[in-house]
Image (cartoon, rainbow, N blue to C red; front, side, top):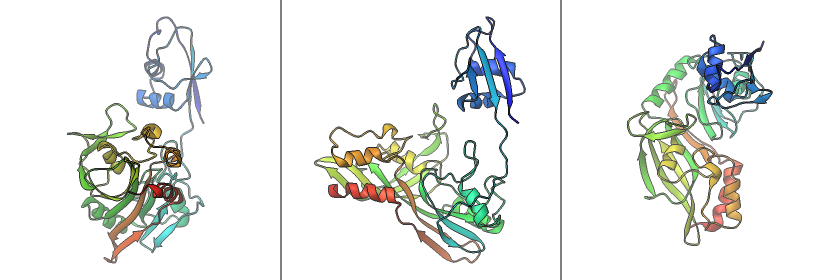
Length: 326
């Protein structure tokens, strides 16, 4: 059951930050939890939703806090179609569509890849990842499409995890970035950590975070007149950090087309005109696809390599760029 708390501000509490006001009034709930409830829209002031924890309260205001019902910690099996590339009794390789979250998390308790896998595999997934991440050895972002390998039992999970840890897994991505990276082939090295201000973003950091390396090479460059337009690039990961390709490409000044976090508003130079401008601005996710995945089978010891065709939206964007091939 959800619970509701009502708080009436007075002259004594005027000027207090909203999150502190709530923390003082609700000592059994942590301040971080209250901040999350505010940001998620569970707090109202005189009937109007408030989403800023730092809001300064005024005397005579009525605040209502509604704590949602707790989510079931165990994901439910759901009959969601899967694009299965390979499957045996030890593991399964799937082609994840853009828009699907890999495992349940706050705000995405259902409809995830894990929910689909629990149904498809009839509950036969490794338990190493915990109840919310059964079988999950690695992840890709919600709006990134492409290949993932999932373990069906703990021995397979451990065997794959060792390969991820020693960076022997081959992971190649196809991406479309703005402009022309120079040189045309290079290795980007830079620690990746949480952004110091925006905690939903990652950033390259000098000393904090985790070491990361990404190799990229230009596959096809596109120009409009004399102006660099975009490039289709291949990125190969040495490491697997959160948002790695997106952060590293943005760091060198060539963010991915459509990236809502590292290429906000998908801005283009005024020299880019016509239908290709519209096609690039209309692309509504990061143009990134996990196209190739290679590993040693953790049980048989045989080398495996899988490739995935580009999804329709990225293929259409490349078609729009085709007339501008350099």
